[in-house]
Image 1: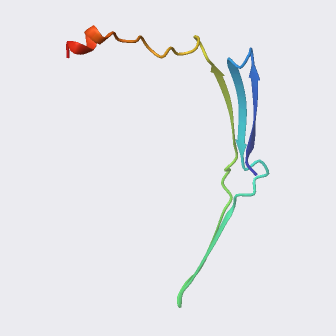
Image 2 (image 1 turned 90 degrees about the horizontal axis):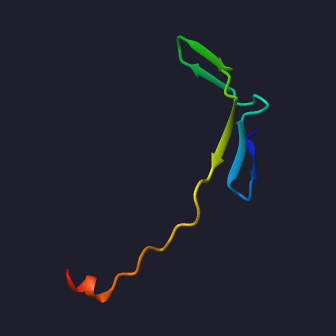
Image 3 (image 1 turned 180 degrees about the vertical axis):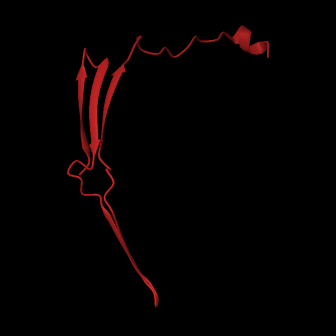
Length: 77
């Protein structure tokens, strides 16, 4: 089971996120190989769980569209 939570604070300037993967430790593998001479089984139960904390702060204001160029400036090119 994977999931996460996000909370915005300070009028949307601060985002706090918590993400997790394989919360109940269900990601396990089982392999079995058969041949005439050998039977091989492998069970893998390595820890695949993880959790991440993310803090993001947006500084500054809105981006401007840029300055409008006059026709005189455009004629120079």
